[in-house]
Image (cartoon, rainbow, N blue to C red; front, side, top):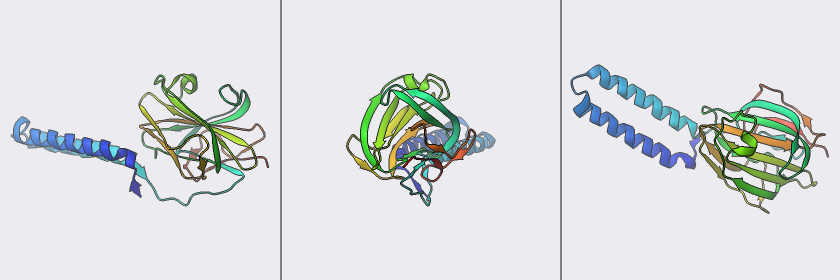
Amino acid sequence: MRLHREGYTIMLTTGLVLLALNLLAYFYLFSSQPTAIIVLLVASLVLFGLVVQFFRVPNRQLTRAESQVIAPADGTIVVIEETEESEYFKERRRQISIFMSPLNVHVNRNPVTGIVRYFKYYPGKYLVAWHPKSSTENERTTIVIQLANGVEVLLRQIAGAVARRIVWYVKENQPVEQGTELGFIKFGSRVDVFLPLDADVKVKIGDRTKGGVTVLAELPS
């Protein structure tokens, strides 16, 4: 396991602030109250541990298959439905949504191998990730990857009530490889994937996914 570079500044800042707070408590605020000092120290260690775990990147054997769409994120499947995709396709598609809690790994990965044909970033609101309007009103990105056979897969990173920063590493006309890092969403959110209607979905509501490993669907040839 390693720690993601997106967390270096946050982890360092958090560590320094907690260290300063504990030193202040030890020498000035609670110098005669050892129990209070211990409680503060334990709470600080737990908080720092939560911040560090958020930026973990576990070692994994990634799934690689041209005909399969792999989960772009860790989380829980909260939506599987046929819906109108109005931004790019402007027609009906199969939507699969993954909710990412603050305890999930937050690296986003390319679900397929291909060429990025479309990219757009939208500033926006910070509604809770499961809100029906979060996919159209929250801060988000839309990324469309075209496979070698011409099939296109759309992925949308969506910020939530806690997530306040979306990071992406792709741009239009860039070739991408399945399983490689696409971006990062800090502190919990959601990722939507839009597939052709004839895609064979392999997951169900409530399933837990592992980014780069779990097969979401089999694409038509």
